[in-house]
Amino acid sequence: MSTAIKPKHIGRNISRIRELRDMKQEALAIALGVSQQSISNLEGSENVDDEKLNRVAEALGVPAEVIKNFSEEAVFNIIGNTAENSSSVVSFGCTFNPLDKLLETFEENKKLYQQLIQAEKEKVALLEKLLDKK
Image (tube, rainbow, N blue to C red; front, side):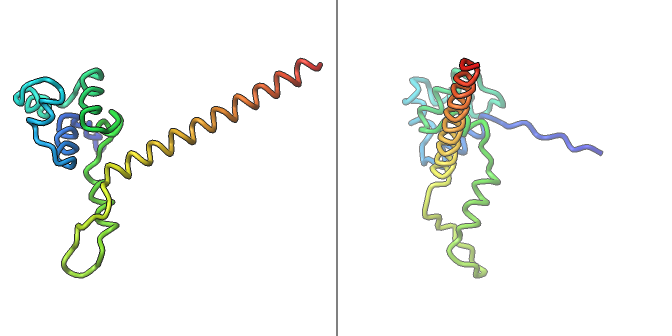
């Protein structure tokens, strides 16, 4: 028996990120210049076209990739792993915003890719230089 991977529900991800940002549908609607009903419909949509997703991401202050790859389990894991004590009462007093940590990770990856590309360019330039000498 194979288990199908459940596709990401983009509208639900938008809703959860908006809630984590402590933003009401009305505020997002104003930021996008649409009605609150449009935001409600958007959050009910399983898929959102890239242009609209990019506008929503900008309004929420996150990259579109964060919305596409948002995982509630990951956020709860981050919160759970940073709980201040392990008593029978679980503290969700997170000292940082999980979305900010996710954004930092994306930025770090971006810098690493840029460094890797630069190293490859330097290697190619060196090889071309060596070939020109022959």
